[in-house]
Image (tube, rainbow, N blue to C red; front, side):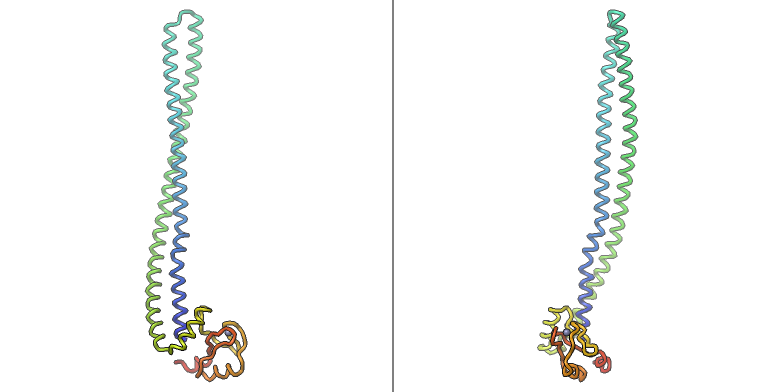
Length: 232
Ligand SMILES: [Zn+2]
């Protein structure tokens, strides 16, 4: 029974140890998502800036064209030519003004994009530091469980040395099959598989002197009332 107890605790410690990487992976998802958000915001901002460059090039072209038109004005030979040029210059000025306005608007868009990136950076920082704190706690817990497992292993070796080889063989076989080798018998019922014991097996169990196996599931049985009456 001591062996069954220590093996149950070992399985618990082992399952806690196994859970740590899974829990960490699910927690790190937040950081990865924040990283993806930041990258998306950075890409958007880059697009906004590229668009600004395009607008600025367009403005430069229009300024060139405008100064050329102004130069032509000095060389106008007729009144008609002159007034056509004046009208063309007015139109070019207007178009240039529209581009300047779009550039100002684009500055605003970029400002918003920069704010988005700043926010995303803060979000990533927060997710990382939250994960860092969690990871540290998880690693501490993990070390605790591992230490516990080592102590249980030692205790298990001690217990096994005190048990006959033949019985250990049976125990190990049943443990491998069911994950638990020793179960109580309540009334006449095996609590491992809920089948009923024969009156003979029940009497042998009650005597507390022999190993009794469930005929259905092969688990080793004990009577709680017998064990509690004579702890050994
Ligand atoms: Zn059974």
